[in-house]
Length: 328
Ligand code: PMV
Image (tube, rainbow, N blue to C red; front, side):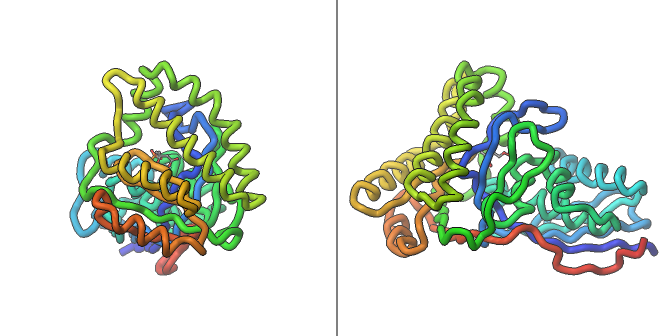
C-alpha cells in the first residue's frame, strides 16, 4: 500500500486590519489589505494521508465525518495539491480544533492553514511557506496569514501572505470574550458577496482600507499601541458598517457584543488601555499590552455578557509535527 502521511498544526489569527470582500471571487483574491496577529492558542491539528486504497477523500472534523459544502472545500484544496503533485491519490483527513468550529473564532484560518501544510507535505511536494500560504488562501483568504507567526500581512490582490514582524516583536495579548457558544448563522464567504453586491458603503470601505492598513503597519513597527488600537477599531467598524448597509442588513453583533464594546470603551476612559475587534460572529476580541492583561481578563470575565475569556499571546506560524512516509 502506498502511504504518504503528514501532520501539521496551525493557530488562528485575528485580523487587526480586516479583510472583507474579494477583488476576484473565482481566484479568491482579497479586495483590501489585511494585517493580523497569529495567536498561540486556538489550534487546529490536521493529519493527511494519501492512500492508493481510497476511492474518495474521507474528511473528519473533531471525530465526525463531514459532508456537503465543508467536504467540498477540503476536496478543492486536495485537488490543487494533487494537480501540483501530478497524482490522483485520495486522502484521509483528520482535523481537530481545540476550540468551537465556525463560531466566529477564525476556525477556517487555522483549519485551511494546517490542511494546506499537511496535504502539500504528505503529497511529497516541498513548497515554500509563501506557496503553502497561496494554497491556503484559495480556500480561505484569512488562512493565508496563519502560515506565518506574529504579525502577518495579506496585501490586496495578493496570492499569498507574508510576515510583518515575528511574535517576539511586541508583548501583546488578545483576549477573546466568548459571548455565545454555537455556530454562526451566516458564513463569511456569502456575507462578503452580499456586501459587495448590495452595500452602497462597500466602495467606501475598499477605498479607505489601504490608508488604515498603512497607518496600522507603521504603528506595529514602531510599537505605538494607541494608534494600532484606534486603527483596529475603525477597521472593524468600517467593515461592519458596510454590512449594515445591505438590505436586509447583515448584523453579526448581538446585545452581548455591544455590551462588551461599551465596557471596553469605558475601561479605556478609566485608564486601562484596551481596544476591541469583531469578526463575522458575536464575540469580541480585545487587544491589550501584556502588563495590563490580567486586569483586563478580570474585567471581561466579570461581565454578564461574557461566557468565558480565552487569553491569547502572539504565536508561531503553522508547523509540521511529523514527517512520516513521504515515500514518493
Ligand atoms: O477568510 P475568511 O473567508 O474566513 O474571511 C475572514 C473574514 C474576517 O475574519 C471577518 C476578517 C479577517 O481578515 O480575518
